[in-house]
Image 1: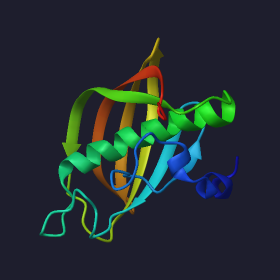
Image 2 (image 1 turned 90 degrees about the horizontal axis):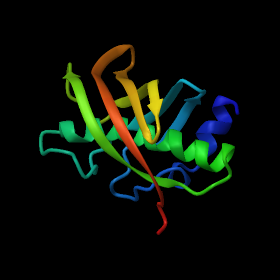
Image 3 (image 1 turned 90 degrees about the vertical axis):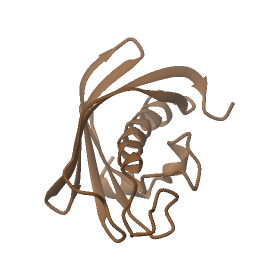
Image 4 (image 1 turned 45 degrees about the vertical axis):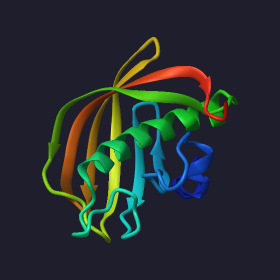
Amino acid sequence: MTKNELESIDVLTLLPQRPPFVMIDCLTHFDDVLTASRFQVKADNIFMGDDGVLNSCALAENIAQTCAARMGYINQYILKDKVKLGFIGDIKHLKIWREARVGDELRTEIEVMQEVLQMTLVKATVKVGEETIVTADMKIALTDIDAAD
């Protein structure tokens, strides 16, 4: 699928999350190892502070939802199955270099480091422009439970 085709997919069809808890706008890249998403930080975001700064929990959720969109894409477009629920199993080496602010466009990349049974370990990077603002290792536990159930 081309970048334009990926970006045209309604991200809600890939995620178990629903507004106002959606922290990615679209997928921008998908292959066996690397998945990327884009997210525009808006003033009405559920995690927005009064100071126009996004709560750091939203940054971890943005990474997790990029993982969820990856799995949603695999389930829907490769396996021809339903979106499944997953959970954050662990976050290590989380480094927030700077907070995200209203107007920032987050570009999140996850690199699959290991997949064992229903656990996926990823190395994540979140950028605004060329500036890296977050890095982390995250473990996602997958389930066989359909998100719609």
